[in-house]
Length: 231
Image (cartoon, rainbow, N blue to C red; front, side, top):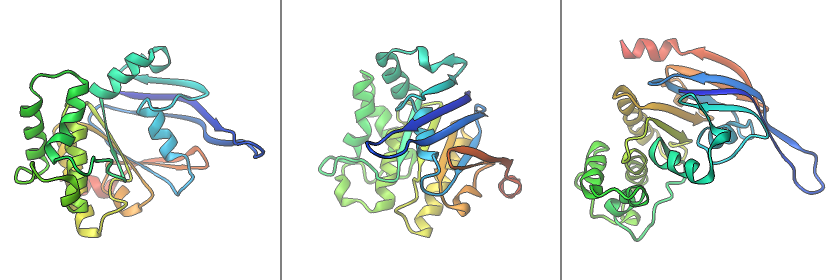
């Protein structure tokens, strides 16, 4: 589903040496995988997610999404793919605080001009366990509940891939477990999940771990621990 070939991305700040955020990265992620991209702060993992999510373009290399070259897409086509094919979850929930959970989840549907936005939003919130919180304002919800709203918003258009960038970074261990279990449940239903994290324990929940350091893939291994847990 996702294929990266020799991606390079360099950032240049005035009066500072260039920083190679991605250094000839090549990898494949198949449909239905649950993959963790693991690395310390500054390793390039968020840049990698931004490229995979079509939020940023590499300086060189090739990105194929469902067999189609991303560099050939217009800005309108990129926006359409981001809305329909890719769901995003971030460490900061990016919810509108004085807007209800339902209204926050409806936003991607309004951009997609869907007529069944109420039905889809209710279904997404129910799927993440917030059927009783639909009319609550975001600022009235706990951190874990807000992240669930963010996940509902990410899946409301039924994307085929979900990119989660440090989705448990602001949460305690109990809520972290709940969010990881939710992501695993979505994956079990067929959604490809790419989990960006610096936390080894979080990465251990994925079936495959891609370790990145200094903008390059350091290791790419199957996670026997997660595989045993699924048996």
